[in-house]
Image 1 (cartoon, one colour):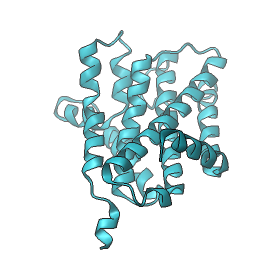
Image 2 (tube, one colour; image 1 turned 180 degrees about the vertical axis):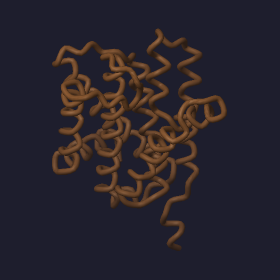
Image 3 (cartoon, one colour; image 1 turned 90 degrees about the vertical axis):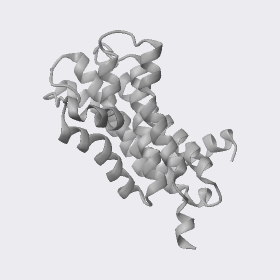
Image 4 (cartoon, one colour; image 1 turned 180 degrees about the horizontal axis):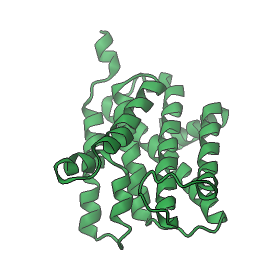
Length: 220
């Protein structure tokens, strides 16, 4: 399938999918809900607008990744003949695009309420890319949207929340936590070296996904 064909398929399936619309609506309502109600402090503990905008991007990119998994599950008949590398490229591309769409939609909703954006574009893309990379691994490792979403949530939200901050667990957070990308860019613009190092966990997840055998192998 060509890139244009994949984009056309994704757009058509998205418009036909009730769960995709519901997840986008949640992303759009996320910012107003958090800014107008009690702050959740999902990413950081402070109540400043900057912290809230980072939390909103983090959560909306998560919703977008789940929405991407929904789309990939709807097209499972199309992926039967693809090899591991092609499956990884398709999964990663779909998940990244949908995560960025959700993050941008949520950011626009926040901006409409007058909240100043507090994340850099590098941090936002890296955060969405991290969700997409782990989501791609889940797409390759498991079948069905629900198990994949559970793996995504467990690896990138529940595990980092359980281990918290700290030196002994820093490498695990570096590999699993998408919120780390937002925190790294709030102190100022990232250097090229920092940005390059920050992409290593994303590449590692995509390589791990590409190395997984297709599930059809286990049925033979």
